[in-house]
Length: 150
Image (tube, rainbow, N blue to C red; front, side):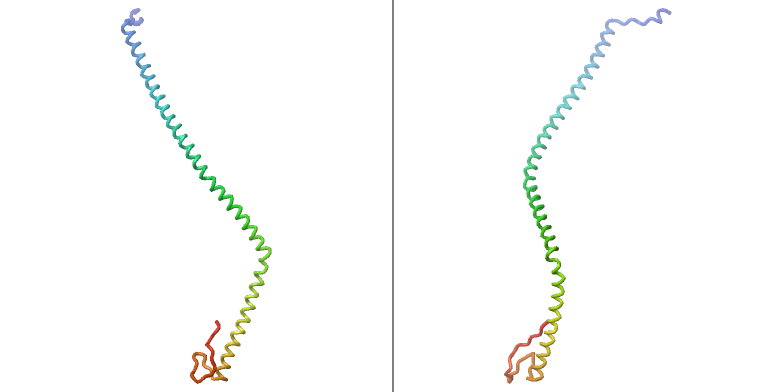
């Protein structure tokens, strides 16, 4: 029984083979890690290159933004001036809009009266002088052109 409990002694050759297998496995792991590091370093260099390109593009866009910002500031200034004009107009000229409308109405009434008197005058010419508003007759001494206000 003592023999069964005791482990079998390994030969030197078996120990060397096992050691070689462990070293090979560790070397394989190191190779994989080395390959991963090289891959990551390449990706980092690619990203650094993209960052340099992006920084150049940002600088170019900043150059293009300078005139646009100036134009925006000019437009804001113009808008402020126009808003000030609108406030001035509403405050000083706005009250005249109501009087303008009433003036227009008064002018329309006077024009309607003038049209009626004009029509009455033409009718007087027809009645008294035998005037025909559409054409001049050869024997008439009266001369005018027909006109009808709208």
